[in-house]
Length: 404
Image 1: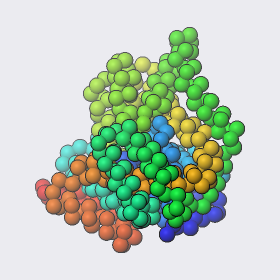
Image 2: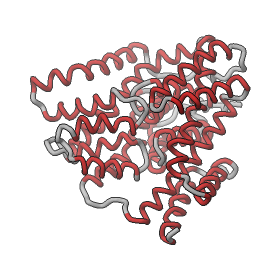
Image 3: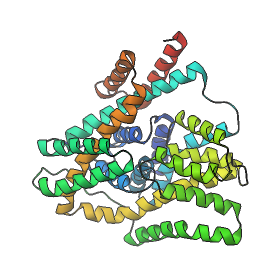
């Protein structure tokens, strides 16, 4: 049974505060972020229903860029009635980690030692619990019968066999095709119509701007010899050409920043380590890199250019796609495809629950017990995720201090 969405349009302050809370507490990477978003906006705030949320996830998995940030931007866009709502949601979710990494770039301090390692380990375990909760809840709603459960399991197998973004996109495509064939008679799960406050003309303009910004800066850089434009181009190109989220962008950034001599290899790795210790999207690693660039612009100016440039292509793409996506998902044949695609999303999340989350966090019986306890707090206890994050961070720190 889907959760009825709230029809009330929200204020920008409501949107900002909702996403700021997640920007301060959402640890664990893009898959975990999708779990946090689902808990907050589908169940707690009821901004949309389960199937509509899964549709957004499926769309953003298809597009280049940071999927969790694109989903958050879309949620703010719909809740706030336009672009201002989307940008407000993006700012609330992104600024905490960006500011923390900017501060790290200007100091030698970092989360180190056994205490820091313990805190980070606790945060990894709560990410396991958050994604397990999402898999369980979305599975019951979006894969409630044998056909869709089989699609979900097939997607899990496909993602396991084809690592990286290729497997994710292939799983959703195969799920959609299976839905066309097998799910036309299934109970309706397409959700109520989503109000997309973006015209098709605005969507086309966004897609055109995406293409122009991909083509023109390399041509203009040679003519204008502008360091700022070169920095923008390097980070925009990395954000435009990556599928699969933050970790996948690292080779592109390394090629653009380290191999050109703009940032040393040691500084690059130190910043990446710091990015693991902060909440929010991993793409905010760009703020650190922009701040420590050898050539100007660097500092706050470099961080701002890099941060905007790396997120901009993904946001332009989802803004451009949403008005066409809403019309597509309203068609009966598309609803059948989306039933299969949504079931595939469950399988993708289940695969991610195992690798990288489980394999990277659970190393023994105590870790399993802590993750299970966090899962019970979230599901049975209905404890807000930020409280569970605090508890698990404290538990990790406590065991580190005790030498366990």
